[in-house]
Image (tube, rainbow, N blue to C red):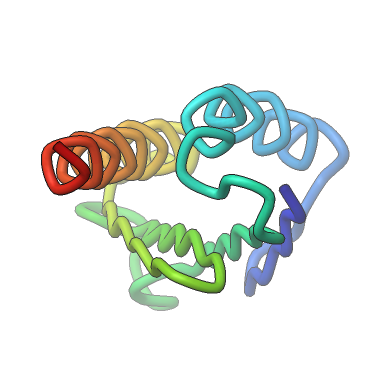
Length: 107
């Protein structure tokens, strides 16, 4: 799975490592959906506002795409790591739901 990251905050080595670690956990789910099609995961991290530091500040969008399917997860949190975790969990659920749908459809 090819991971592409776009961000308007500083992508430190520790944040990049955290992203890689969290989203690489989806590989086992992605393998079942991609089925020999090239897959791509685009992760976008941005601040929702630049003038204050309280409230839901970080917005993470994770979009998984193959030739046949496109799935997306959005998350907002006041901590970038919490937003990344929430987006990963939502995307995992989306992938599982799609896999279940395909399994039911093939019966």
